[in-house]
Length: 280
Length: 323
Image 1 (cartoon, rainbow over the protein chains, first blue to last red):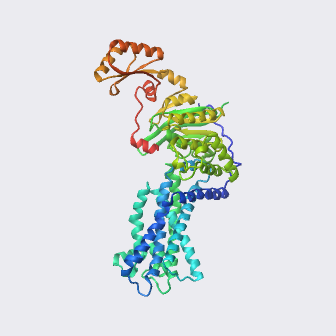
Image 2 (cartoon, each protein chain N blue to C red):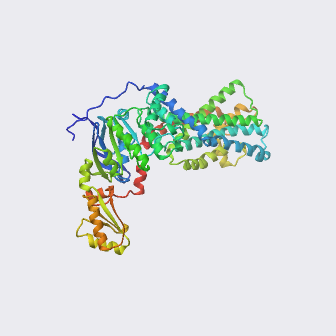
Image 3 (cartoon, each protein chain N blue to C red):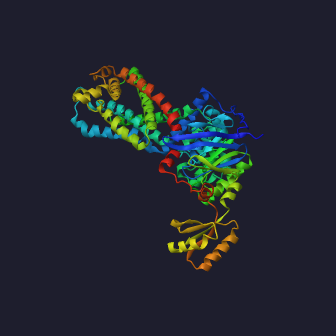
């Protein structure tokens, strides 16, 4: 049998672009694939839209009457919290979508095609990122319609936009990683409820951290979502400054650092996971 | 000299304690059709996933078109096209959008991709449902789109993993016709199936596998010669009649009784003539039977004839890893 040596067949490389150009092209095509699913499966946007909207209504018109934050209108205190929380919920949204998507047969087809394997995951991340942006715009629009009045200078606006984009990017990668680690969308919802949900409430989202009990206060002071909420509040609401820990004294720097840390951990792990486990 | 499209030697894959494929050596020559025949959980899907670079072998090696699947995966992916048991399509895109996307990912510009999708839609008779979302298509329709997507560039080696499992007879005929056309064009094909009939109809060579290892190999004619062309099945009316039938027939024929089904199976190389002869004997004995019928050999018959035991049923665990 082995007497007939298998001679290598010439491969048609000419028609396929290769290198970084092919990666960018494949990523754009696969991002387009993810985006087309949005109007066809609109419930995928629920995590990043309906939940924040429910919390806005709940805290503005139900619990808000009992919460008094000195020196500031509660609306202007709460909306930065909602923005931080909806960004954090993006981890769950991206995770659920990824755990759904990565078990689909189509991913196997992509993986057995002569395309950049990295583009499969970058297409997933970009698609999820666009969903986060869409959800974010809806939440901001809803907030402004209900009378949130952020005070933004041009410089602060640019800084805020940069931080939000960086934050969504980092949280999307974290969600994509979790989505590949868990075995089902239900498990992802569970993790979201046990980890993201409490952290997003502890983060000074709806009440000031300073008034919390010792243990939740200690967690909140080092919760990454606290840095996110504090930086949005710092940039949009003059006259209010969080404090109590280094990250709350310097929320913008802390937020950027958290994002860099999350990306530095999640990107290589997600890539490794994609190449290894889905291959097994 | 004929080139070898697929060559595996000692190919092995384990999932924890479970060995899905063990020491499998396989050879598929250019321009031929080889069928990997076996029951659920035999290791068929695991094997083709290793060939398509979706799984990394734990032992042995596999080459496609002369390229190693582990060290030269990118080259292998340019030569091979795998159409799996489960539709490898985006369910939230329409049939047409899927084909255009796959064509674009294979390097075509937007216009060329649309033109090619149009040709595939005509060829695979997809026109009626081309603008429906894949999630709303029937199993047979999905399979046709899936096959079309696997043929964007005529691949050097086409691998079809159970292309007709779960299809109704009409859709199965459509798929078979398509496969025959491709083979006539000279495509090299590795086909996995659970149906002896399908391997017989399409393959030049059949490799029978069970528990991840080869149990027999040869041309369909050679295998069938060992299995016996057709069989006569007699179903007794009750268990007393079944015992009587066994007593009546075991001396004259090579009977294969299945008490739980009250069925006695007898090889019938003479086909209709044998059926008439056996029916006459049963009729004369006045033992009450529900059915006397001629039928084609199944995978179970093949296993029984070639290995002496029936096909192993897949454990749920085995099915899970195979999926």
